[in-house]
Length: 282
Image: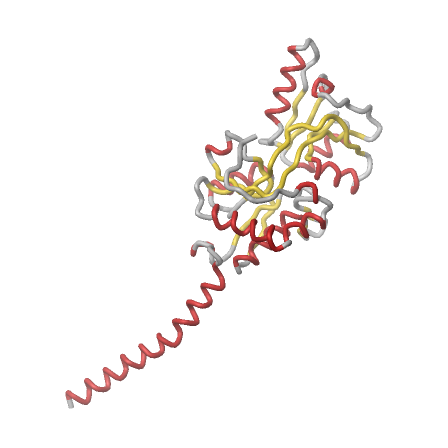
């Protein structure tokens, strides 16, 4: 009887082992398909903030999201074989959300020296800035001193704030009126401030300024080009997602997906030859 019970127990163990052996290759295969170099903790997918900064991110009246940052989030997620979800945010909140771990990355930020103390970056396109004013307003000239005496809006924590502050000092050093710098939570707010006459101008990227003028009446692009920048995905400092993200972007560049996305929004001139981790600060 004892030998019979031992034989039954051994058979049960072998049966469980056989079942485990059958399921193991399928699990490994599934994980391999999913990864493409993605760390295990991201297997459930990404959460990405949407800042409603056309054409980077566009949120229509129904809440539907589009734009090239959305398209890049889709392409990157497809590359890794995971899903992604978006959440509406302001620019400042998007960076804070990365710090808190609420977001996998935040799109469209410049890798400044100051930001590099807190974040890591993966580059994905280049841009610059001009001013947007009411279409009935006088043109602003092509030098930074032509900004003197104007009130200019920027987003809270925006990349161009340091430039506007430097330009304002140049104005006062030259005996001209300072620039009045005003900050607002998002791009919609600064465009509304221009349209309502609350400020003279708003600092917008070339891509956003051109899109804004083309899509909404009453505005025009003017002034000098300033603050050239390489825009990046913002990640937690030394994030384990840096290397996989860079490789994903370079794969999209190589297979043509990158150019296809930029062309869709008329941004072919914004292309970079390769993606880098923590590019030189502006």
